[in-house]
Image (tube, rainbow, N blue to C red; front, side):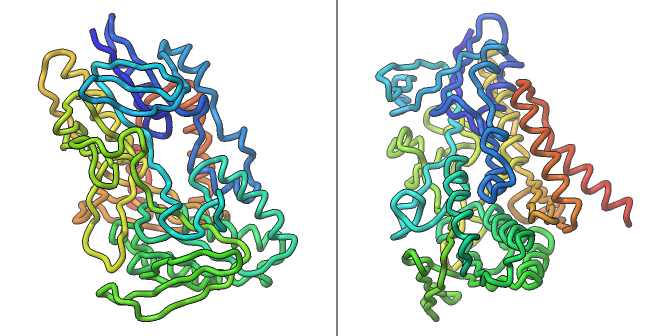
Length: 424
């Protein structure tokens, strides 16, 4: 008999709760804690920002689903994790005790690390949260009524570059639909050492694929870019050389700006020695288990992963859906093993499959493993990727609504590679 608590109900935490529930035995308890009563499908946020989706279409009320599955659901944010006491303090003053804890909070968005960054008091939009995407859509509708230059990209320390490329190209597609693309100069600004690096040192030929897309769509770019300040009408950028020394400065004009921030751990876990690294990310071993507090596991964006290699500016590693899915499965099996008095021995595969949508096409890639060197290093583009992303959105939202936990990304990767083999 054990009480398992999952902290965070995003892409990883929600499926973690579903999969853990399927492995529980009589007498075990499962609690899911979230700072919101709803799940929202983060990959659809760019579509919300341009008005292609309504917020309600990509949200799921977890209260009813959890009740149906027998999962205790607490829609109250955590104030602090107390690993020495095996408890979580909530912001409403209540405390939740646990035998095993899975931390899947996602990150805190570090908008404060760049002057003028962020939708709250800054000059940039965000697609990191559905509420941000709704705000971005309001700003977008004002912009298209009086169009001008656009800047899209990510700041130094960011680790999730795919959505930045997606959003830039979705904006291009939307502007063409509105027949005002000719009135909008666009610039992509990124700390990556080259276009298509993605925090992964590229996957397949993502460098050529994404450079070609940006060039074909008349989107200029600045790589090795340190964003120093964002103002209402311009983005201030230092372009550095391979040693990190400034070789050129830019004042990029803008009337609509979306820059992905760096991430850090959430306040509920920050500063806990042995649990997190200096950025507040959860320290884990090969079994997703914290080395110091061995009844605590970490999954998803909140875990600490070292960069793929040195770069002139800080560039983090993304935690993609396939990687998170494999973390979930490994964690569920390892917690079950511990409850049964066995040694945890399941490891996550940490592979990557991504469908990057451009509104009228896209790029798909498969990296096995995600961090090089790889056994599979594949990327292709085409109009089919857009339709595949739409289908995936419908599938995943239905999966959350129905409380299902079946894996998907491994099947998708096999399907993609199988299609490629048939072509050849």
